Amino acid sequence: MLREAAQGCRACDLWKNATRTVFGQGRGNATVMLVGEQPGDQEDRTGRPFVGPAGKLLDGALAEAGIDRSEVYVTNVVKHFKWSPAERGKRRIHKKPRYSEIKACRPWLEWELEFVKPQVLVCLGASAAQALLGKDFRVSRQRGRLIGSDLAPHVIATVHPSSILRAQDDESRHSQMRDFVEDLKQVARVVRERREGKAA
Image (spheres, rainbow, N blue to C red):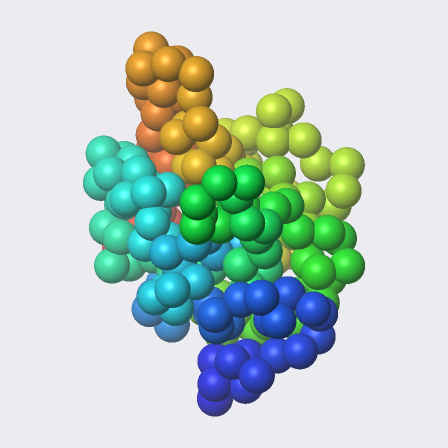
């Protein structure tokens, strides 16, 4: 019901230039919840999160880390695509959302957290991490570490997969991908330990 209500959200002005609201997707009782910044161009067109190039990279990293994508809930702190037109051509260029826009979307994210009740919450990138863990949080300093929070039993922050796509060269991209997969393996370990603890 709230998913449908979000389609008509006018809490900030981002809806005016977006095609649609892009709500989270995945199982309601997912063990892992991944939170990114905002939908991109392809997400805005399809209405589904993480289906563009960054989503494909994420899928590959999850598989490599041993995390079943079907057991993950994916969403963003902002539900509308914020963009500006490219100087040439018809491309829509991603623009970083303002704090006021992130704050306007917060009730939807809080509902998703309450609905899913993830055991592991993963913040993808600085915007998501600072929206959920405070403005002083730095992914560069605290990535890959388990963080104390009342949002979920286990919280971890890492980079957004789109940052890997922007790497300067193949060598840098491979290195960043390796580090990203290692962070997700930490998530997989937590999930496995919880399951083994329940089975014991």
